[in-house]
Structure formats: structure tokens, C-alpha cells
Amino acid sequence: MSTFPNVQINVVDFASIKFRAQVALVQKTDVLVGVTGAGLTHALFLQPRSCLVEILPQGINLRAFRNVAKLLDLGYFSVHATQEQTQEKSGNDWHYNDINIEEERFKMVLHVAIRSMYNMGVLEMDVA
Image 1 (cartoon, rainbow, N blue to C red):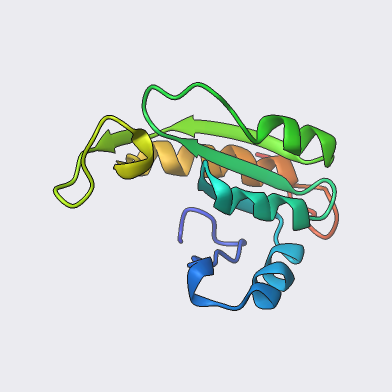
Image 2: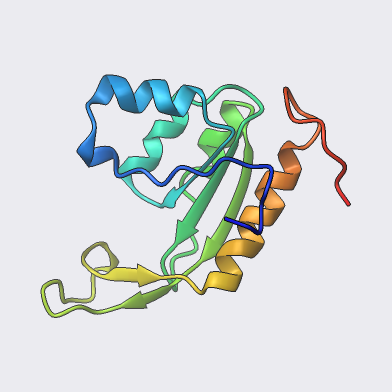
């Protein structure tokens, strides 16, 4: 992603890889980004002082992983997405609907999370 030229970004579907590989990948991750839910329990495998970004569906204000991040000495950021009712998954329960996040909103939260990692560990970059 050209917005972050000095950062390696991996997009991973954890369902497609074995659990051991999931844990190994997360242990090497500085910023973990995901939609709120069971998949973010991978935050338990982040190294202290890493960062967690929780994407929340529209109208959901429970930041479930904020306390997890605090207990594990992780940075934490959240952002709301919009919710779309799909034909396959309909209903009032947000668990069954897809979410969509505007590209600029997504880049903004990534920008904040990545910059929070500058001068931590191996990253030695100026903030501005």
C-alpha cells in the first residue's frame, strides 16, 4: 500500500491457515486489524506494546477488545464501519450482516495505529 511505503502489510484469512501458523504470524505482527468478534482473540498472541485496531459495525459501541488490549499492554484504536444487509444473511442481528468501511476511514485508523508504533522496537521513523 503506497500510503505506508515503509510498512509490510499482510492481508490474511485466518480460516485458510492452520492455527499454529496463525499464532506464529500474529506473534510477528506489530498492528493487528480486524472486525470485532472471536477472530480478534488473536490479540492474545501479540507481543506487548504491539497495537490492536478493532473495526466496529455501525451502531455498536461496545469496544470488547479495549480491555484485552489494556491488560496485554497493547495500543488500542477503534473505528466504526457501515453495515450492509445481504441477501444471504439478513436480520437485525449485526453478527449476520456484512460491514463496509470507507477507504479513507480505514487509511486514517491505520495511519494512527502505524504511527503509534514509530520508535517502538525495530521501527525508528520520524512521526512527521
